[in-house]
Amino acid sequence: MKRSRYYLILIINLFLVFSIMGCFCRQKIEVLPKSLPNAFFGKPYYAEININGGIVPNDLFFYHIEPENSGLELSPSYFDMRNSYNNLTIKGTPKVNGTIIIKFNGGTLGTMCPGSEFEKTYTINVEE
Image 1 (cartoon, rainbow, N blue to C red):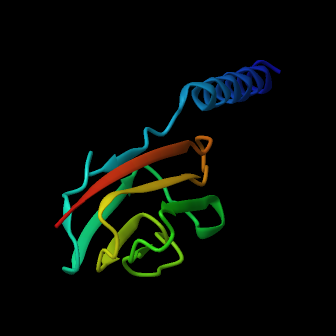
Image 2 (spheres, rainbow, N blue to C red):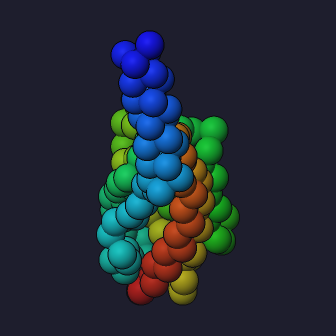
């Protein structure tokens, strides 16, 4: 009787510890670099972005480039089921002078810890 009671209390305590750990566990998402280099009108542009802190699936990632006819594209550096949108590439030839704004947001998958959301805006100045 004492042994079964001991195991019951042990199981309850383990359950409580893991439940409380799940409440305090948060993934910190870091988007690097902090800013992107400037571009030159009519010259090829290339930059890499890394999203660290969790797996970013393609169905939880959204982006917009302003103006739409800027000549730049954002795409995954390589497509892998585990890290589909963790490594991004911005490339192309700028077709507009002024400012190009790249906005994206998304979320990460949760495992024992819940997933996290992130948002980032980059400004690229296009010089002649």
